[in-house]
View 1 (cartoon, rainbow, N blue to C red):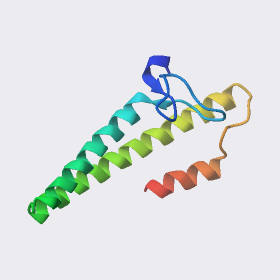
View 2 (cartoon, rainbow, N blue to C red):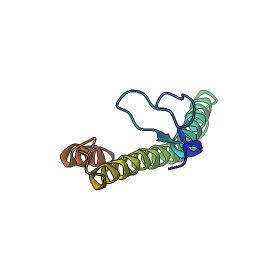
View 3 (tube, one colour):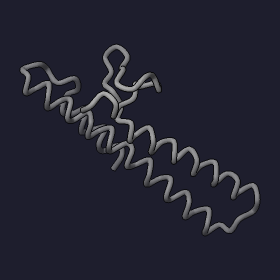
Length: 106
């Protein structure tokens, strides 16, 4: 993964990570920022008395965007695990823990 395509786990400079952490794809951060904007829009819709159907539609869209961000994070972690195993190193997370994370999003 190119360094300019990832951001640190806490919004640090692209390609950086904290101790024991892997870089987060910039795509995930962008998706989460869009969700942040969607949630702000939903709050404004509620405050201004918009129709319930419109609000629920926007909540569903934000929920799907959060799911996509979560699955992207998991697929990134899976790639790190596969790369570590291929290099003869122990996987940074075991299969059972990865499966539990995946199921928490499903």
